[in-house]
Amino acid sequence: MAVISGRDREFLSERLESTMLLGSYGVELPPELSPTGFPEGFPAGAVRARLGAARQDLEGAISRFAGSRLEVKPWGLALHYRGAGPRFDEAAATSLAESVAAAHGLKVQRGRLVLELKPREAVDKGWAMRRLVEVLAPSAVVFVGDDLGDKAAWEATRDIDLPGLAVGIASPELPSDALAACNLVLPGREALAPFMKALVQAARG
Image (cartoon, rainbow, N blue to C red; front, side, top):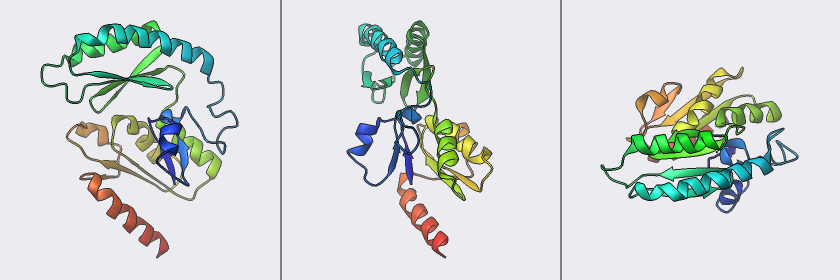
């Protein structure tokens, strides 16, 4: 089993054991996938500098958006607005994020009540899925996700030349069209453990 997450590898390794961890959507790779820990050609030093400058711009403007908060990640900046309330101006916040991103060589990725600024050179979960398949050569693939950042991996799971199952987890915060690439949609996170148990039992059978 591998975990492809928007969280960084350090965060994941503190909580998960005996698992192949791909952090920051695939920017942070385990040794099995990359000797450098990054995708080939990823300009880590230059990216850190650009993220630092973008962070200063966001910190200077975020006070205009009551109830929002800025999460600083190793390879991204996340503007969260869960709990900000109905007066939160999502359009203005999106405009700010896109303006800052354009000024510093970044791109904006939407998530569930979050706008994340990432390096333009950053990969996505679809790339990470294809890299895993390339190195591990599995006989089949199942990918489970519950956010907009998982869309690329759902699409990759369906596109690779292997038996694959793209599984989404429904949420009121997730637009229904985001799940269009899924073969199966679970009604909520509580359905994931029974689904995985059934999948293992079927494989053993």
